[in-house]
Length: 167
Image 1: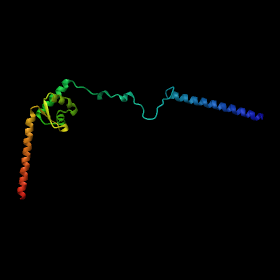
Image 2: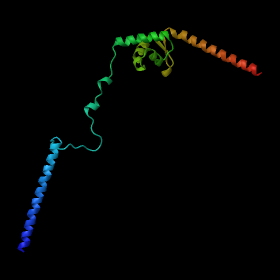
Image 3: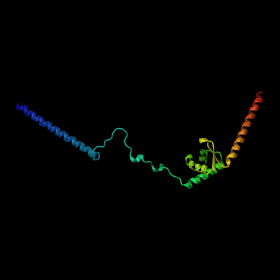
Image 4: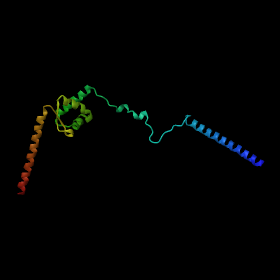
């Protein structure tokens, strides 16, 4: 019996030694990993889902920010628009912008200013809007009306010739 008791004490000592040794090995492994990763005291935890945005991603670059034009710059564009419309009445915004090499977004404010000053007049709506100088609408409408009349007269003449030829 004494031998069984001695064996059990030896096994208990060996088990406690193995447990303590494995605890020390785990601690040394964790410490070496922490030193390799930058000596952070606690590992960073991140929940499921997308990572958080950093401030660099949230802020817009300075080149994309809206730049305000001075009133002098708007006036010079307005003068260029007025000269273009005077030379070519009845153009739309895209045609005016193409001639002046400006986008329709850049033309919006100067055109509104000219309309407010009653220097420009419009006909049509939305995308079909045509721009004229204040006194040019009546003369341009007459020209368009006479042009339409000539086209109708030509069509009538062609149909009468066809009718005579078939008869």
